[in-house]
Length: 210
Image (cartoon, rainbow, N blue to C red; front, top):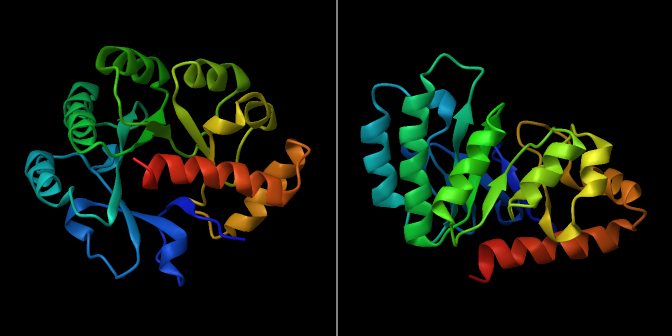
């Protein structure tokens, strides 16, 4: 089965089977690989603005198929207003290039929803590594935000969202992406093949048919 892992921080074999996430200065594309590149809120510091200038220079590269991960995190010491400033720049960049935006969100769902309403983006927004409850999943998908789930998740959240808003990833996990598909397929009472077909259709529409 052809499966594209939409978000990982690990370089692996078969580079055409995952989207590798990295910082702008770490972008060194291998032939046949796919990349998402952005400024993670954990990495926002005094050099963030120059890092963003570097991101702008490389973001149109054809192997960069998404911007991010970018976003907001209330569990870190970096001032939220500074996080918002850098996040807004990356939202605008994703819109300019018409590339999906991969979002890191920790206790900032209200802010994400407010920004979505403010920008009314044409490019898709994807919250990666979603571990929230069903109610929050429903609020986000109601705003046409995609949710990507990794190894850890709440079953009620996965079960509640429309399949056309569902994505799967490994993120920091060493678990095989196929195993995540198998466990999620059981939750939806689908075969693994059926789930792969639906989610990979989402992947194609988001990253390759734009």
